Amino acid sequence: MKQNKLIIILLLLFAGLMSLPYLLPGCGAVALVALVPLLCAQRLAEINGLKRFFCWYYLAFVLFNALTTWWVCKATVGGGIFAVLVNSLYMSLIFTLFIASKKKFRGVVPYIFLAVCWIAWERFYLTNSQISWPWLVFGNAFGRTTGLVQWYEYTGLLGGSLWVWATNLSIFGILLSLSDGSFLRWNAKARFSAALGLGLLILGPVLCSRIIYNNYEERSDCGELDVLIAQSNFDPYQKLHSVPQALQNKQVVDLFQKELSGREGLFSEQATLLMLPETFCSDIWKDSPLSSPTFSTFKRELLDKYPNTNLLFGASTHQMFYTKEKPHLLARKLGNSGWYLSFNTAFVSDASGRIEYTDKSKLVVGAELTPYPKIFVPIDDALGGLMGRNVPQGRAKNLNVVEYGPDAKEIVRKIPVGVPICYESIYPEFCTQFVRQGAQLICVITNDGWWGDTAGYRQHFSYSRLRAIELRRDIARCANTGISAFIDQRGDVLEQTKWWEPDLLHSKVNLSSYQTFFVRYGDIVGRICTLMFVLLFLTLIVKAISKK
Image (cartoon, rainbow, N blue to C red; front, side, top):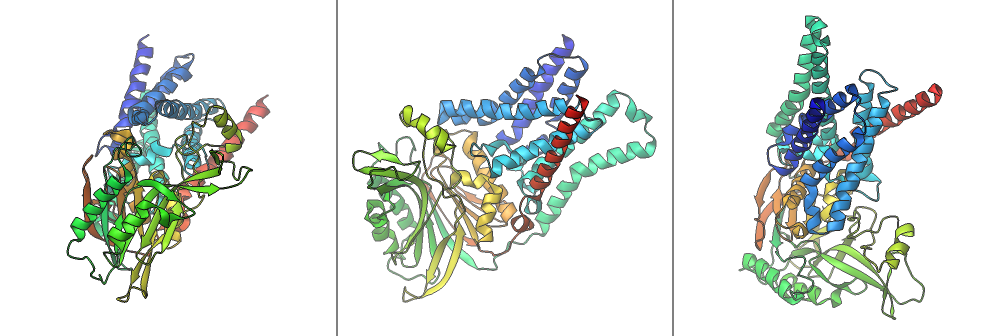
């Protein structure tokens, strides 16, 4: 009974420690030791022959997921519970596979198998999975302690996950050798080497990060851009029904005009980018965007009045099809007149009437995406259409901020801008696509008000800081409400808004065409770990078959 109580304490300690980096600023380093209690609990359970240990560690993973992402229930109770239970199940299955591997592998191999299996799963979440919830990738634990991971420009996010596993397994290994007395049987050189290796593993990346940070110089090889960010601050649950779109338009127009006062009708030599958040309006049909009252208002009150301005904003858009047959698997019926498709779109436009747009590719399961539509769309239809059915674009696409000459016709320069829409900003390799296509600036537009004043919007904001390091791009982040901000290429927050306040930020951002190692070569850590997992998993299968 005493051993069981100790196992429970260790599992609770794991869940609490692993949650801290996602909940509190400055706690990223806690992740470097947070898995040790979990590994110790497994070791004790193994020694004592504890039955049904799966239930124990599954509940520990549930607690970890619930502590860090319970706020999803603020938007959808069912979706929040599903995310916690299913993500915990995935984690538990990986841990079960690790326990099974200990029967076939010896020494440190099962622990290497655990680490590479976990990182391979994280990579799958970040790249190929339709039901994807990579919020708690271990590399994200450093989102609010970016000074520790400036080397993400080389390894990307999963380099952080590897660091977490390597340090935790090393500490656990030394504790294990101390508990069974083998550490004392090592000679002095072996003990010194083990201690030195652990110290280098923990402090080495920290020192490298500090050196990179102190020596990094902000790049502006492509010049600068004047950017205005308007935080509109409308309750997302009311803005579509209780607050007229015309009133929302007026509020943001007034915010912009207050900052641009004195420039009306005057040509600015350099372009100015005005930014509004994701899904700011829902009155745009893709077939005729200029017929939208919102589009007309913006052109009349902003773009025409302030020459050489570009406006970037998000919209829930639709496309009509007047056909008898269903034009697309994700189409919905519109009365008796036809069908329509839905999109989450970002537009950029200027006084010339130029319109460019990109659609969101990484969609939120349930709210925006019906996964595996051939299977789930018929089921959803039978239930009355409960799930979102936005059409994903499937690839990253840059938009262009255009700077004109004094005649307002000659194009002086085009500035390619990557626009991750909300959820897309937590996918590192997806964001590298923008930079590979030439993006000189990253503009994140999002609507984080669904979760209220919880850890959710702060976590989401911190992940943009990690993208700034991986891509070495300035980030202009526009949220419906908290946190809109300017982030520099080292992941430092230069200026940010408060929660639940309409506000406007104005700054010049650096433009760069430089490509980091991570941008050029992608997620090498994830690919290597996936390969190692496949090889070890095949070896495990062969051992299991040959034993029989």
